[in-house]
Image 1: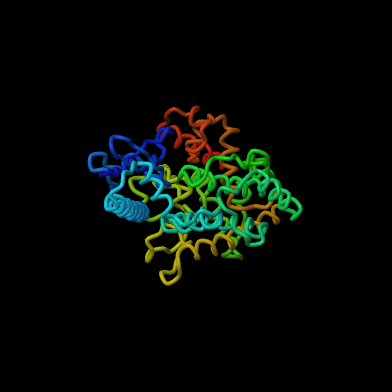
Image 2: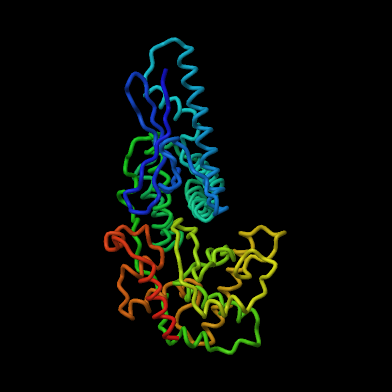
Length: 401
């Protein structure tokens, strides 16, 4: 009888997330099926072949629990397939098991497969990525006039036509590339799952990242923002504080700021896991950060900052609403200062990197400090860094204010 084992393959990037895959064995012949489940090596029990649930991070625990449930569901499917093949009394091999497992998935069309990917991303708590995939799917659906396309019919002609459609619709080159990269990521998943052979449909369309409008501002502008008298407007004052807090914390994104818990600050160190990449970061708690935290009453909240404030309203809704308000008010502040670019939360992140570079902080330290663990080129540059070097860089920048 065939057997199925759950395996874990470590990442080729040091400290990155590895991949869970299934190994189907029958008559000493093994076949592998990749999954979309990504976890860290420390979250895998190799002796028991199972996921280790986090005891300290509730959000990570929910993410890992969802993966575990999905794995259990997949194993039950395998068991039903193997039982059925055994009962038929005919010869079969591991390829038959894999083929039957894949065929259980009725989503052999691009729209259908994308929908499943989006649903799974939401189950795993990856809301932001699911939203970008949803936007991509909706755009491609409009191009196709809601007519789905079989996976084995996805080719370069369709993608060239889609690119032309985007161009005539007034979509910028970078936005077009954004849609193409998302589609390519989904398509490559279908190839990994052996739902279709690789036909390289994106070979003749643009999938690069062009130069965008400069978002960074110099240190003198950060000082101007800090020293503005905004006492007449609590909304402008709050937007300014969130901008500065992001800058003080090495360009922390607003979504990560929103979910900072008070327990994340201990012994003078603020620790958090980037929602975009899953990377754990540690930041030395500095006086300017404390001044902003002390300014707001959060005694009845588990969160460090007053972005998510109401237990009766969905947290993500509050974060998105706050983000819109903060960025709208930052643009007002930017206009008051006569800035040539719109002032947004992104500017704080870009400014920290730009100013750090002007202070001769090594590129590797900047990259590590901002959590750019997915940049392969920078990773090669990095090798290893301790937090003292990063904290020293942050202290150097804050002393300039």
